[in-house]
Length: 161
Image (cartoon, rainbow, N blue to C red):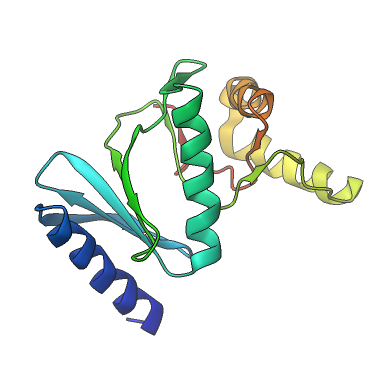
């Protein structure tokens, strides 16, 4: 276990304890954090890096302001709570189809990538999603309409089936 993972797990336990809940199992994790299920049928994501926590927290706050919990037929987890000190976000657990993991998203301004990078990215996504790619493009456009620009698009983050 790398150092940030151990720290993230410790912060998740502290966040859960402060909220009078417990972590029941690990749901997943990646380069940005670890996600745990709680005994309140919610999930806690604990981040390895403050910058990624702040980015995802701000996306969830935007979604909360806009009262978005569904788009294009996909569930979007509802923000339950967060801790700036613990770099943790508590959210509801959703079933497919869903969109989640916003640590790579940007708010208000579309990232500026060179044309060839965008073309390679699109070709990769078309291959990953196959016939579902138009649905994924609709989801990306829906978020862009909320000034949330999804970058980390992959089947684990946009799960359709």
